[in-house]
Image 1 (cartoon, rainbow, N blue to C red):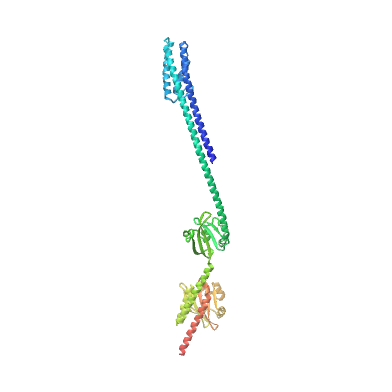
Image 2 (cartoon, rainbow, N blue to C red):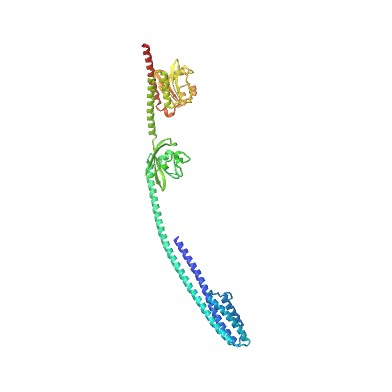
Length: 488
């Protein structure tokens, strides 16, 4: 680029110098012709006067002199003369033309026989005037030459100064170019170093079992995700992938995105359950720079098992409190019907079930003596009289054998209790848990719960069995109190 600029500059200088030289030489040549033809006029008039004084007529020379003098004044003619742009010279040329007209009149008079002395005197005066005109033209030419010399010197100085400035500029540009090149090389080396560091960082990132990813905070583009994350979200390539689409299955940025909370040098900790993996994560986010881009690094710890254990413990504690409340109700209230009704309500409310009930076996039938129903759940407060003796005996055998049965769907219920299709349909059973009421290994009835959330099925068997035990104790206590009252 610099060489090209120098070449263009030198070419421009050369063209300007050449044009100025041609113009100056043309003007000098024209000035020389004017000086020469002014001298021609000076000598030719003297020759003409001598010929006239000797009696020889030369009209051709007179015509030639007319043309030269007119061309010296106007710059137009066959001799290719220029009109000097000098006022003094032009005044002399005008005076020469007047004197020349006087001489031509006097020549005509001499030819007619007049005295030739006046013609001679006029020729002498014209010679002196022509000689002065030649000197004036020479002075003008000398001034023009000096002016041309000054212009060439100025042009030379200007070109020299421009060349020096251009050389200085090019030198600075070269220095700047070298500096830029050094900076580019340094940046390239820095980029390579960062790339190596990134690769070195990615290696241990891929080895950890926790999910880790990096995303652009402005474009949400995934910049990196470790092998654990790729396995969790079934990814092979992340090029062009957007974090909220890949990791959350959303079409727009997450409303809970933590970008606005991140600060340099600080971690932001939060929790979420991912809708794609169905796992619960403890997340730690940090603002970082990744390959020159402002990015969010997120490390996810899968706490699903711990959360489940926590929920199990919480559920176990809550269930113990519920059982204790039921026991308190059974022992505090004297009316067993009211007490059992409150217990069923406590169980149904805690388990979020649609229906809780207690069947008692009397006279060969299961009587639905107690029942609690949630809102919008229909009551089925009747005895199961449509069951045959064989079916009832089979049900008794199943209940005696299992003690407590948890059935997660209607198909399992109908499989265990043969011939219960109508019951499952009428009671709209989706899941059910049943625990037996036994006295001395004799089936007295059962405690059941219908249609509760799946997470409430956990450990429900032990809950129902415990409550059945205390219900039986409450019945025995009531019977003992009745016997004591009778004996008293």
